[in-house]
Image (tube, rainbow, N blue to C red; front, side, top):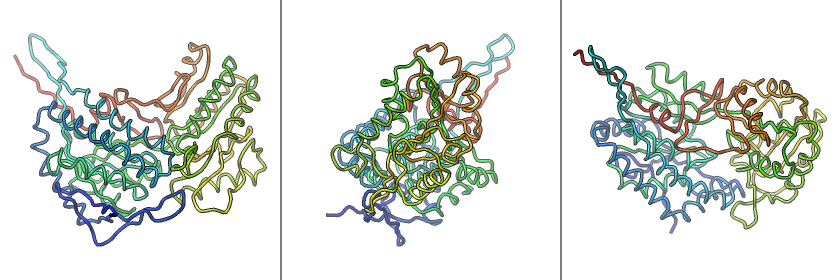
Length: 470
């Protein structure tokens, strides 16, 4: 029997007269339909969250921890069903979808270990000042389509642990797995604490401008993040914005070409390159450039691109037609400019699905669109450098500052470079590593505020200082 996907408002599963169609990006066929919520449903969800806030925020933090742990167990108990649905709507191969579902459960357990204990700011003969954290209230969480389950869980975990209540909106491209998970966990959380509403592009602006929302947590493009700020400015909502990135990887000449190429490849091409912190600009020292490039091409020629539900597929499709057309436009621009392709760059076969061939470019100029713009697809431009000062300057010459990486045998030299990069996160000899215990946030136009760790959790609270005169 087909599943009927519904939204969750005040503990009740609801449907709407209007619906959204969800497409499988591997074959462009309709998977199912979901509710297309509007202002009326949003009002009910915000009202339910506001009504539930006082009781939820007054619960001991250990009770809120227990709720996160219960959700983690439910995710693990239903991992196979969630994984298969995630591949169908998002496109990523089964193995990567299983990793996302499994990591979602692990993430909740890690987040549940955090604390918001009070801090003594002054303890003198004259006074005692204590800093405590109080939850901001109702949170609007807007989730993108590249990691729809993990990012929903990340926002949910922080908000609920802090004592906030939540209205969560999945992407209209990938709402199915989130709605199924919502149905599975709804009895583990008091009514109104978690509300999940699906809807089209009209719903996000309504959420960010809603007077009953106290904080917005948004993950998405920088252009949309600016609109979120505009909408939230009217009543000074608190914001956490995790936005775009054009992340640089720097490869020093002392590495082993074969070893580093394997890690570099997947730092760019995991999830078909649809990762905000993927390696989107790869700078390789001229002494080792040819060797690393050859290894990357060899790997690309061995990795199968196709339907993520098929065995042996390493890279799936672009998730939606809009992004597919943008990636194809950037590749076509590179071809029109006469840039050299080491692999890829040719249109795929005339078959259904949003498939882009794995594409590696050979030393395009810094002002090339395929270098200067975030590709968010299976595209890897390789650039040569000769000096450390040169590569630091090039890596920092971007409006973005989300993440980056340095690859080197001499880790002291790598750290010295990392400390000069204008990004929120720099990895040494790895990429894409995030932890619920470690804060993550961007510099420049990659957003502000932090997710994860104590700093991220505090973003869902106000500081309150209580001072007692002795």
